[in-house]
Image 1: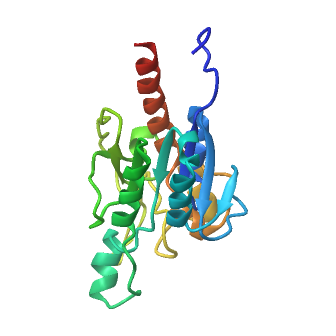
Image 2 (image 1 turned 90 degrees about the vertical axis):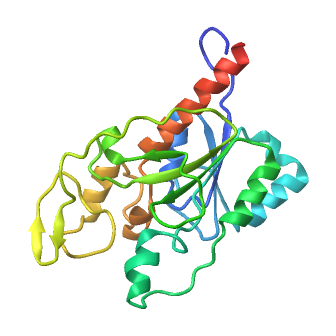
Image 3 (image 1 turned 180 degrees about the vertical axis):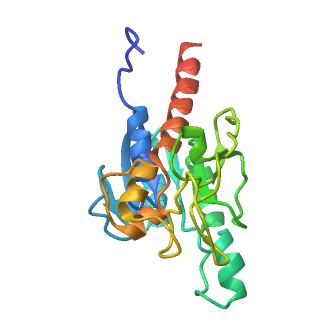
Length: 237
């Protein structure tokens, strides 16, 4: 730090970046961000690389380029372990077999020697639930609990704020009003695209599928700010 200002912006590698909910949060916290996804993401609002995330990470490690990053965020596909897939969908025979990428991802993340997080929704995914964030903690219009395995830096779990009511929608033939919208699926009183955008603080994509998979930028803005505070304290020591 020089004169109270950060001399350079540290860089985050945003793996499995999807539409950029996580990446935008880190950018707001003060990071430069590079997103990586296996499919093209034309609405991703930050520098983007189209690649297989695990292969790209392995190549960065092999070349030594990984050292330009201060931190790695990863949001691997959750279908192999999310509550919906292993619960309702599985019980009804819906969906298809999904590959669990987390063990291979964690092995590579540990090889980088960098601090990292692995983000997942509630469910049976093999991640530590070191940190749990909720939309109500940030005054958002969604609940959207997300769990984070955190490695390489100390942090404090913020207190979980009691929910103000139910998620709006139909349940077993009964319509329930509520202060939160269901930012997933269609029908049954679930959110429209504009409602999802407003509830999560995302205005750069209007693709429903991207919004249903996104995490609110407020989550990673909080994580990024917490990480930078720790890094600044370490640098000043």
